[in-house]
Length: 300
Image (cartoon, rainbow, N blue to C red):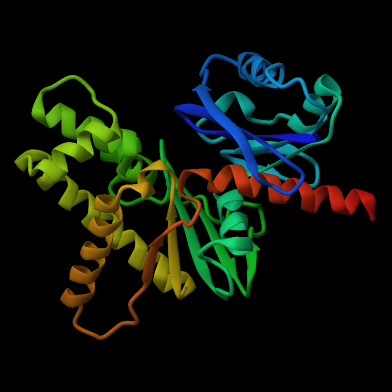
């Protein structure tokens, strides 16, 4: 059976899935993301690659950063800074001996949702992925809008506060990133750092500090969603990333948006905010769709 390796590289884990020719996930797993060098990153991919003994047809990659998909070139690697200025497609094709295609992570999520998820038939919408940072993809006229310099959707770099006074804590990637939120909760509670699963259990259990900080977090996200609404006027926002599987997270943002709309002095259209249909697998599935789209150009 011909198999494809789909990679979703985030700031914490490299998630992977072996997929068949129909795009179905056969098996999947994850490994910690190295922050040392692009060589160490490539070695992790190689370790995953060696796991599969069946015939392998290609590598589909979802990565953070600003990516020229036609050239397979990463202008800036987002949280994986060692990918700045790397012709990754050419390098990986030479090493692995199979076709390789890569795309920005949030755009991969959008591709999956547009093809067979919650963005089907949506003319104008936004896909946001919450993880180490906040990834974004704007859909305009049923198509992904990338902008003049491929920067469209880089919402992690939205400046939400005084940059000089707060540094990176003023940008949406730090304000909205799940790891950063968990650290704020743990620091305030004066306990060792805990991952999202534990922190959201505290919220569910009614921990006073965790609930208070979560409400503040959701309000800050609601403000930025409203700002995005004013720029694009979308009908729907899909929220992805592992945290999107937790109803508390989605409901918290929905309630914050409702409260924000209620506080406005004028009546505004209200966004439809839903989790991604594919949740944490959206990037993996979208990377496969992107691979097939790019390879069809080669065949034509």
